[in-house]
Image (cartoon, rainbow, N blue to C red; front, side):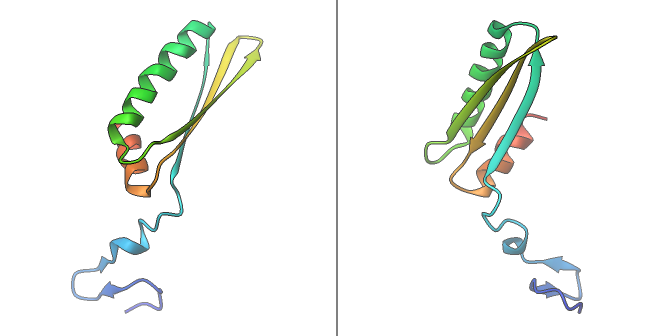
Length: 94
């Protein structure tokens, strides 16, 4: 066995899920430049719907708009109550 602090099983090279999903990373971020504010708003609405589908407790959604030379940048932070929900949301976007 290695000197890793995670609980490992030497026979199958398994690792305890708690060492990977430890609830330290509960925020997913999104960033993109859109041609118009309306397009950015549509994307925010669609992503908010996906976040609401993944949440067990209300997800904190913080959008920020920045005017740029080529359009409007939308940055969003989605903070979930646990890391598993964050991963479900992120995987749903692929």
